[in-house]
Image 1 (cartoon, rainbow, N blue to C red):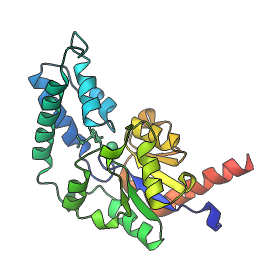
Image 2 (image 1 turned 180 degrees about the horizontal axis):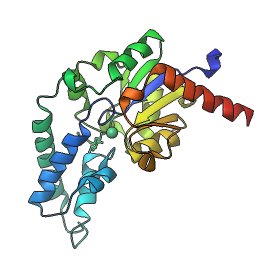
Image 3 (image 1 turned 90 degrees about the horizontal axis):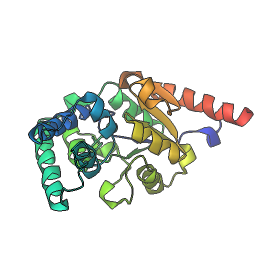
Length: 233
Ligand code: BG6
Ligand code: MG
């Protein structure tokens, strides 16, 4: 593999990729939806993965008879805040034992290979979680989602990570567990790895069922095959 074919950065989603906080987001939304007497299950939750807090609340409220049209902004902010209180209570005791399999080894291999590491999480709790997981020091850039005009599936957060790392998108790999996240990576012009179900993540360039299947060697192999196929086709 010559230098121009090499991966220069890997940009990670957090929830559901580095740690299984996707389940805590589900529980926190479920508590709120139950209080509001609105339906909420795992299938519905799937649509919320990768989506920011207010947009998620609006999707839940769209199930009201008025489609959420008569809910004031102030009321929405209160409910979004309540969900976040539920969530913060659930993640209080998260520590490094909740890092998903294979992730620490991947971070170490990336550092060893001089491949930069970025974080592209829609969560405003991401920095706290990275600290609780004791992995913040691995990151060369952590994008602040509050500074972006558009959330996933728009490419903004992945492009901001690449810009922060001063790497062209075509030399970046993005890793995501959400359909909206995979769409964001592809719209950013990056190589997308999906973690989860094929049916949901089918737009990804390469899909694993769980993070234990991820390694730098495997990522490089699939990256190289795709780049090579593209060059020869
Ligand atoms: C994403 C999650 O990472 O962050 C979503 O997949 C979540 O489920 C979003 O809604 C925003 O998180 P937070 O912590 O800012 O409410
Ligand atoms: Mg995620």
